[in-house]
Length: 323
Ligand code: ADP
Ligand code: MG
Image (cartoon, rainbow, N blue to C red; front, side, top):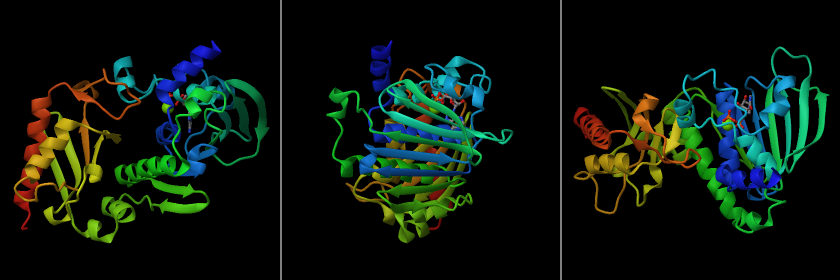
């Protein structure tokens, strides 16, 4: 059983970044408005994620660490949609199987909170504790019990770079949430969470980028697009500034990327790529689930439709604008 857990953990947990991704998604699912992420040594020795979300009732805390334990079934009707959204009830179990986890949590109805410690999948302590509403998860010594995986971790600076990228994506995709990100004791990012998308761009990419973004809002059929696209002169030398979110989750997709780039094509130089932060709202039925949910990829049911939608959306945004 233990071995199975460790192997299965590899699918969800491959690096500090994937731990942070799962824990921050849980925080957002819990309705948090502020999320703090702290890492040390690239997250290899220490990751903390604190949220002010709904917390976990004492009697459900141990259960939350069991594989396939998800409280989210009731929120979404069928299993396929649930998987699309990344709810599989595996993250906490997987993380706890390959590290030393400490969780402190309290719901608003409880007078005392709960603190649990789990190492390599085994409960080490479980007690009442005074704490504020919400949840803190601390993950120490990732892969300490799986040397073969620990070996594949990169240098702390590289791993923290991946976490920083993720935090930037989260801040860009969720201007309505306040994120604080601390790396080795220094605050790297702290967003206001007031819902202003341009402010998020300002925090992440700086003032020049923020003032060169155009708002976009486009709707057709099952698809609704909103967000910000950079004026052509803002374009950059790589694709790292192309940010696509589908229903609030960061996604990489070749079809969307090429549609947007092609809409820019006559306006930017060869070798330059656009800067954008786009959120697509679409029924989960339009998104294929055959791609591993822990990865950042999705497949659309209808690629041509998606391509045309994005191409037309961006082109019309340019037409509306006096450049
Ligand atoms: P999933 O998110 O797929 O349901 P997880 O293993 O990530 O599975 O979490 C298991 C369960 O633990 C969740 O369904 C949720 O009920 C609870 N949970 C985890 N993290 C939090 C959190 N930060 N706040 C409130 N509940 C949480
Ligand atoms: Mg989860």
